[in-house]
Image (tube, rainbow, N blue to C red; front, side, top):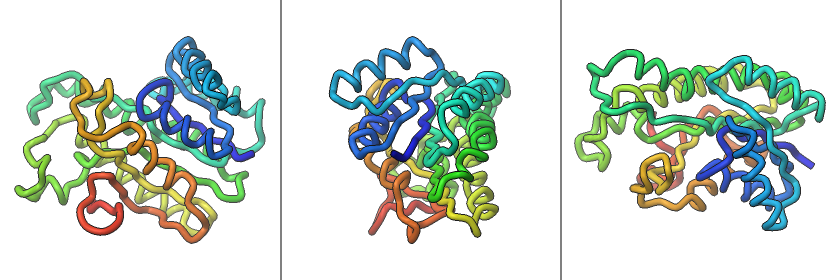
Length: 244
């Protein structure tokens, strides 16, 4: 059975992604900053008949927590097939370009450095997989191209911390995919779109089911699938690809 680690998976899009991948036969390590919340999420999935799921405590903004999760997972398995860097925060508001730099640092610690630390910590286990996949959950608000287009529907949503943290994550995705280009790895940035969740006070028009579906799609792509790309439910035109 293939294995998946999803950070920030105890609720919303992360939980639904765990649900969909578990239903496809993957064994899910459901990452949660709080083990209590992780246990509750796992109990919910098991009540639905999805028994191939287990909680793991991991706070992506805390390197010690990441290392502890890596040690725990290393005692359970020899390889990891899929890593989904889903955990993220909006950060304190308002987020003008003149926002307090501590607000920006806090967001980057989770959304950018957290994803990097998790990736680096679990890369050795991923290398043992025959077909490793990494999905960095990003946002359309990280697209510089779209932010430069006044006709874009989210053109006016300019956040000084959250958007730039996802732009940086996109750039890291490109670098990581390039470094792993001659290996079986597939590394992509995936934006679930503007989804109604606790993250945005349920203001988005998208559903968690559709959000998780696109994440699961790129977490399970075949050997002929893309790498080093940016995909989004909010992409215009044919296909999911979003401009950087």
